[in-house]
View (cartoon, helix red, strand yellow):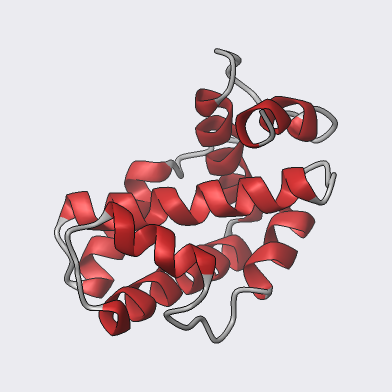
Length: 139
């Protein structure tokens, strides 16, 4: 199977749907992916699309007080917390939508992106996700 989905594909889709510029869209998607990874590591989940979707599903009804929205607000040049909340929710919804239709591809985006954040490994396996991410968030 050819897994053509990657983070750049998601950024391009998100840029078109949201009207954001590419750096803003990339930053927001990166923050969402990192947040999901942190949640998986914190809950000792082992990855996989089911667990990714579970974390994403818990990100309904975001508001300006949510830690993910606060992270995005700090990392982007968008200073309106209402706008940041809307864009962050759009990013979450986009990833969920893509995961519904292309689960293996979206899982590979998380695997490769989160693997790149780790110790140089290229793949985060379902059984190694917690070990790979644990040192990033719990030093």
